[in-house]
Picture 1: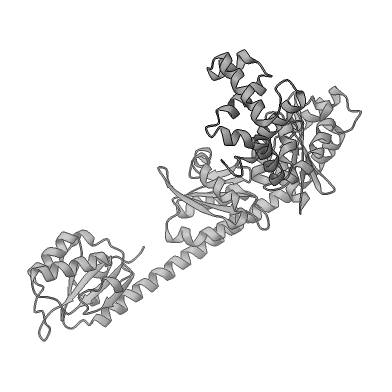
Picture 2: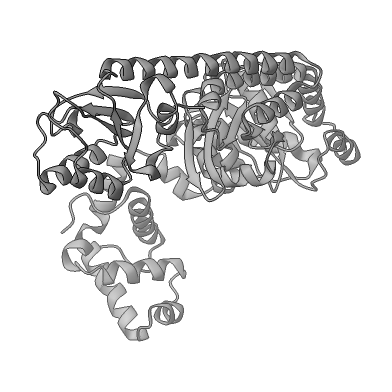
Length: 501
């Protein structure tokens, strides 16, 4: 236990006496400091026993009040006043006692025969003894944790030993956030409370860590893994000195355990990759495809293929993605990672977490026997994904908006400004442009456009005729309509006019 003012009072050789401030006897003492400075706050770090003979104290109530305030501001643990023959103070001034009592600051006196050096030495001896005791206890606990990690109990034994040793709730999850084990707390509930912190730490990989003060307590989240993120450690109320010293030990032992599990899962990953190769065979039947998916515990009626271009360590990326999706159906082909997932999986979310910044194509949802077709489309989308800097799905592959987005932003802006510049100049409020947009989207329907905009049909016609006069593009000419529609779409993709008028 840390040294307190109460412990200091109990040291027989010091013969200290309590004058005031009993409420603060539980304060922790980190050091002892003798000073005659009447403004000591700037020189204190907190938890010091301040010792003075009162040489520079102002001998009136405001002076004593100011001095006690200084000590409180500096978070002093206690005040020791030397009194007796030959010293400025023969006894403790009543005003000083009064303000110390009000502030809850322990005020002690030392007999003339006890030097301040003796008190300082006693404090440091007690602190050293406490630190030695803590170190010895920490080493014993470290040995227990290491033994638990080496035992057949693995993760369960390690987490139980941690909780028993430091009385801190603990949970471990894999990189996808799935609970692997817990002790001293409700694991699923703890992970749910830590969800936002886990998401933040995951963005930084092994370099991240985080914490938060929540209603359930103080959370600490640490990443686990030796060379690659394998999971997370979540601790609840690990605030004791021993716990703080042992967190790094626990992280190291858990990282080794998760790496061991990762290596042990390699044969399973190879089996799933072989199963995926059979699923992608062009002659696979519907029954065979369903059987293959059932072997991977996937029962979805529709699946989609995903292709990710790995810039390095494709095998590790495949393992991460296999962990993150139901069935774990992933394989490496050249520099690509290919996988099949049930239709309902949030593929963009998985890619954000495990393949950030990598080109990725997402194939259409198909019946299981057509997975190879979905894969071909996913692979075909990789070049578009590289251009756009984001995953591209088959649902947008045939979209003119996607094709436009692949063009040079400067070229698109120039084209849109050239076509729409007359409208920008004549219609700062955008009424003509909005009417044109709705009219084109309703395939030139006067009635539907007027209904959607709440305008009279003649007003819509007048505006479209004005658009034709200003732009030189006729409403009944298909090529002119396409130009206007492409210009509006390019502006929607690229943003507002480069030079608003």
